[in-house]
Each structure stands twice: as C-alpha cells, then as structure tokens.
Length: 436
Image 1 (cartoon, rainbow, N blue to C red):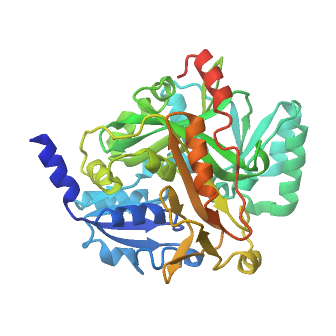
Image 2 (image 1 turned 45 degrees about the vertical axis):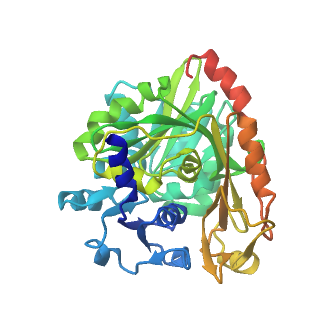
Image 3 (image 1 turned 90 degrees about the vertical axis):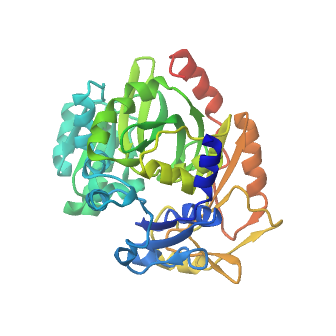
C-alpha cells in the first residue's frame, strides 16, 4: 500500500517556481522539468538573466506567478523574510528564514549562536576599518584568516588565509586592501587559523527536523591544483552520504530546535576545521551550496522535484542515495573567478560547448543558454559546466568524472584535475581522530 502511494506521489505533475539570485540553479530547474513537472525560473541579477534561455521557461516577475506555483524554491540567502511570509500564506517553500539568513550573512551572529549552544569556536574579532585590524595583529601576533562579512563575502578572492606565525602576511594584505578598497570594504573578521582537515557537514531540514542521511563534503576552493592560486569560492568537491556523523552531532544537530522555530526548509551546511583537539566550526551556508547541490544530485537516486516537495510539506522520510562517493569539478572560462565584462565578451560569451559523443549524463549546465539545441556560454562569470562522477571508491568516482570531462570541448576552458586526491590523507586523519 505504501509503495503505491509513493509511486503515485512521484507521478503527480506539479508547478515549480524557482527564484534565483544569479541563475545558479539552472541544473535543478532542468532536472525537475525532465521529471515531468512544469518549471518557471526568475533570475534577479540583470546580467545573468539570459542564463537558462532555451532550457526552461523564464519569468520576468516572479511575484505574478506565486498563485500558479505549487512549490517555490529560493536559491540564495536574503529571501528569508519573504519565504516566511509565503509560508504564512499557506505556500510550500524551499528557502530560508530571517534567522537562517543571519547565520550565514552575519559571521558574528553565527559564531554567537554556536557559543550559545556550547559549541567550541575559534577566537575571532570583528573590525570596521583596516588600521584597527593591523594594530590588533601587531599586538597579538599569530596566524589569522581575513574573512569579509555581509555582501563583500561574495568576492571569494578577498578571503585570505595567512601562513606566517607572526601575522606579517596578514598585515601586508590588510594594507593592500586599505589602499584598493578604502572605506567600501565593510566589516570583516580576523579569525585564528588552526591546522587540520577542512570538512563540511550538511543535512536537509523539513521545517521540523533534519532528514537523513547526512552529507559530508570536502571543498576545493583554490583555482589551481594542490590548492594554489586565488580563492574562488569553489572549483569542485568530493563527498559521501552517511547515516551518522560525529561532526554533525557536535554541530548542526544542536540547531534543530532553533531551525524548527522559524520553519526553515532547505539545506544547512557548516564548514569546519577538525583536528586531534576537536571540531572547530568556521561558517554556515543556510541554502543550497554551489557546486555542492549538483554533486549531491549525482548521488541522490530519487527524483529531486519529489524530494523537494516532501521537504516543503514537512514529510519525514529518508533520502535515497548511492553508496560510495561523488566528485565534481567546475569547467570554467575567462574571466573566472574575476568579473571583467570585456574579457568575458572577448574570450567566452556565446562559446559553444561541443560533445565528442552525445553523452550528457553527469553533465550539469551552469551559466548557459540553448539555441538550436546547442549549449552556449552566457551570464558574465564564466562558469560553464559542473561535471560529476560516482563510484564505490573515490578513484572510481574520479575516473568517471575525468572520462566525462574528456568528452567535452570548450575553447579556453580550465578546471581542477585533482578533485578527490586529498581523500586518502583526509580519511586517515579523520579516522584516527574518531570523526568518521
């Protein structure tokens, strides 16, 4: 009886309205559309609005389609108040709350909430001008991480991880930022740097409780292999799903009551540094992670539209996932990770993505449009594709991903070739610390 009910639930055609900040969720829109649902996508950022043309129906004003939608999906932070208001009107919404927005956007608030729940955090201090921060480092010599807050944190290349034990490299960077940004930088944090394994845990929340299994992700943030070059936000990730995690129990699990109070629906992720001395949370992502959601989708074996519907109605269920590992790498073109309209138009705009063989499984469209069934790069940042692979071992997943990448031709493309290579070392250390 239960199986028939589930089968009928997946076959019901629904209307999904996706409200996107920068068009990041095109892949999700296409996946839900291919599952037989109706999808409309609105993109807030004007230079990004061509993303998705030819792939999915576009909405010029999302508010005029609210009554049409069975499920609304908000793909970024900052919409929390709107999501709560829509829920109060009886709408089914995947998205944040004002509380969950604050966890991500206000670093100090997030750290204070961790402290309230008795979770150990790294020493950090907020600053509103560079000179105060420089004086602080001189008075408290140590290695630090510079972390922009608010809107400035979207410029991932501004995050700086110091390596000098006296903080001399941090002082030099602060002086450079002062010259280039002046008073426009906004507030920022200096956080004490510790050595260990960087790992994030995340789980989906249905408005009342976390849904299992838990996702464990290892991000690769620098532009070049071996963690060289500028910080991009992310170039790819490796991950696995697990029914339990000591890191999750020590961090996110403790937020269940706070999230339920506001009716949060979606994914919450916390990035941590872990070592033999413990688990040190760094920052929250209270929305889909990018590219995390696309690599997760490679490991989720149930229709993603149906999974989102079950979350939005508050159903308690287990997500069906693959055993083993998933990996994914962004394929990008100039000027990524920077914004330079002239370079983008010169090197990348309307570049065609060519497939040697017409195989598109594990190929996730990012900032693309479709004309005459050809995939063309659009937007303004140069993120073309996310390519994923799965396998019972990390090497199997990497092999699948690399084979798929080798089937693709994009002019001027670059990508990380080492996504997942750290796993053997990370596994040994996490296992020895009892964190797996």
